[in-house]
Image (cartoon, rainbow, N blue to C red; front, top):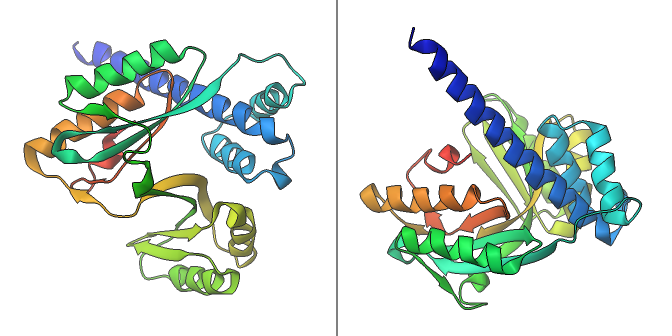
Length: 246
């Protein structure tokens, strides 16, 4: 008899998580489209659209978001702002936000940091530790030649790096080359499962045990804030811990 509420609670939590994700994706598309509604000439928009479609967002919803960003439809007034801070153990954290009220947003972000023993920092304090890169994800079975194919394409297209972990490979590019490298991979028959423009740390800081739990909770709390789009950190968490963040 106790199983019903548990299943219902899980469904409610999943619906809330999906709702937060779709809101973030729609905002990203809308803001990206301000630089042009044609995704062919707008790498950020192309990456945002790909991410939304892979999350099963309908094309109608995507198109409406593009129209709002490009001015064809009325849109809320959002501005982009990034907050920088330190978490437990001195790990660096960048918080990308889209907001219509900076006072509200900075208050919520500051509260999340201080509650977990971290603190906000001045602009530029940790931003220099991160590089903006294009990331293309490929899933493949262990032992297949897919990783070798990806490396060949990376060499041909002058991609920045290829990183393989068991049955998953990431091809790293400069943001402006993201779409060209993606198309080259697909032409070679490789299944692209993810494309995004992301910030990656130049170096990492390892955290373990109780400290890793507190850092993970801080990252989760930040991710769940309505105005937060993406959270970046140079924390090197135990294997599998980062994937717990919804």
